[in-house]
Image 1 (cartoon, helix red, strand yellow):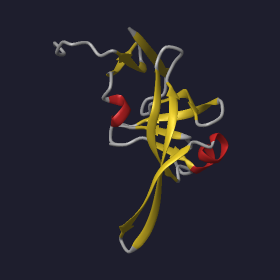
Image 2 (cartoon, rainbow, N blue to C red; image 1 turned 90 degrees about the vertical axis):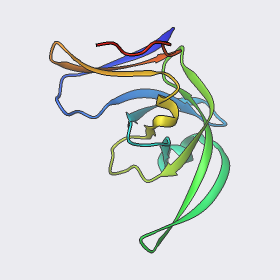
Image 3 (tube, helix red, strand yellow; image 1 turned 45 degrees about the horizontal axis):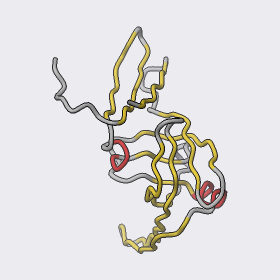
Length: 138
């Protein structure tokens, strides 16, 4: 079993951790936001330019009369020394207002067990692969 754990001593702090992401070149450490409200994982424009991942597709979406071009890239994502996903599809997005380099969405989170808890006044979260094959019990 492989897992990662992060601790925060600030109530209401976003669930962030450092992960490694790579494209055609080498891996680099980036700040990731774990977002259970996001169905897909996102990568910032800045990181796309730095790692040069493989472009998989382009699409245009219209939202409130604004046309948004969305590019999807295949990247390697390392959550720890023991947890690495290859060819993860991430959409390029403007994340400058979030102060993170990537957003880890439910497409990744749903592949393992994701736990958030309060322990000794510290908020911590853990991600484990493979997931346990048993229900949560009170």
